Image (tube, rainbow, N blue to C red; front, side):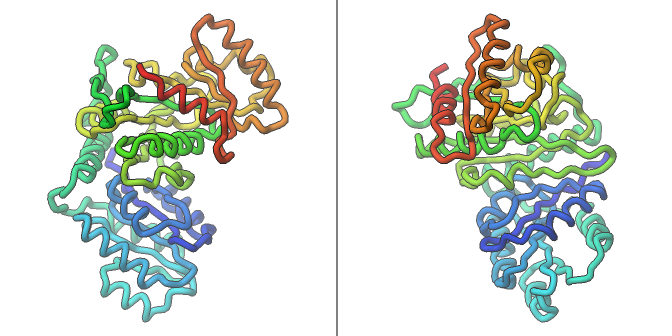
Length: 388
């Protein structure tokens, strides 16, 4: 199949109006477009960083609070300064953007402004026609842009059939380098996070990223985050919208769609991981799967991670359900997130008994990832940071 069009959408800083952009996002994915949604209240720096890391064709901005002429222009200017002028900018804002404003914005390099009353079909048709072909790009000026383009090449190779899934005996390269702080003995780690949708994986990862960044001013982190592709359509890649602490120049995040592969990962995940380990210079690589069910074992093939974390919600059902969750046999760490819920204590006891049947050195931790300075998240951080 042809490589899907990838675009980034976002709402500017000091703007919390997301109803329109969410509706437009859904229409885009129905038309076969992969949408990386950055969320609302996002700065120019956040938007440009994400656009470059995701190597998108274009950035769509929905602005309802005014200041749009300056904000859109600053996004265009920063893309140009970063050597990413191939990434185009379009957007709209209902009745807040006048035709005179739009003319000024076009002179400043904005591709297109949609006005109130424009149909969803018209917007989607424009995006498909305007951004379907990959534009000519200048030579990448920095390692981050080179890496982003390389990951796109890998994904496009699988989409076109030029690249195939790795053979069962293929092994990923093991990074043996210590991080830059000479006082630290923590080596490069690849950590896999999996679990059902809504368990709080993304929020938990974001809290761990905050702790890693604060501990060492030189550490660098990469995140491969996965969301499902809609059958015969596009994908809504929305993990960045809840990644607040990860909006940092020391964090490289790539959103990946499953593109028809079952199990929680993309066909290109393993090759993208190899690229990150070989060329990225990252101290930690975090892989987050799609929300998975009972059968998924995303990290067992080829041992692509060093540590597997299963994140669960206390409301999983009966004890019988626990017997059928395969990842409880395989995870190194099991996290009961949202442990402030009423059933959390019972869930901890039942999961502890279930893990005891495995006769393995598995760890069970209770967390409330949304809580500031949660002691459970601190314990998880200490555990994943232990010397290998």
